[in-house]
Image 1: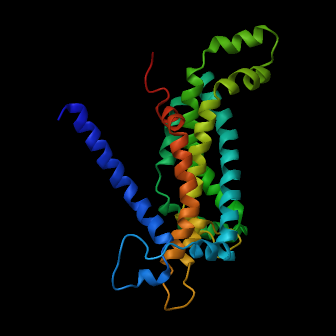
Image 2 (image 1 turned 180 degrees about the vertical axis):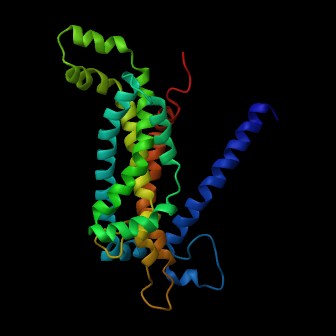
Image 3 (image 1 turned 120 degrees about the vertical axis):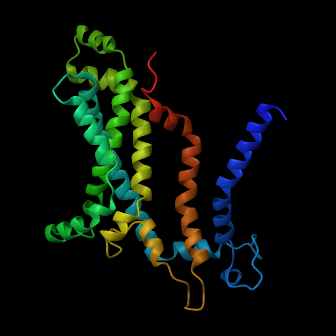
Length: 274
């Protein structure tokens, strides 16, 4: 077998191994609860059923959590992208003291362990009255999403030729007009990539969602899945959990596959100087 054949075989093997957990989750989502406790386990369902999805969407625990996930993730994404856009532009275009130190500190914050902040945030949020609220989740999401957003966007802004902004200013545009009409459109791929990465971080978070909420008022889907139960104590909740997981996972997988080139471009921007 040629070298290309070996690489192709290895790629297919990695793809199959990576896809297996998703395939197993899909299989469980379409199984009747009786298959889970059956004495003859099988990969494929004995009878394919949509009842698990119907049950999930009829449960207020899941529907309210889905609304919370969408709302909190979108608000946090928009705020992070807007703030990071101005911060990244300043880092890429302006010269000021400790600029590199500021960027390094931002990256260090993104690498800070979340578990060490849960306890202090729990006490602080209860004292401020924002425990179990949307804002109580949005703030910590912004804390960890902003550094990555700034780092990603600053790489894109550094790639934009400075002469294009100067040409716009020569033509009579103000600094704000040059930024809004020239720089932002050119940095659109970076803005889009940053928005996707930020949304994924907020959408998939479990630690903050389970620690800083106690009711359906702000609990997101990853945390709500831990409270799913079967129709009775003798019925397994696994099919319902898998059905809910499919609802929130498959759209994200499709989004990643569709925009994978933009995501890779955003993560590697500025890595090579031409």
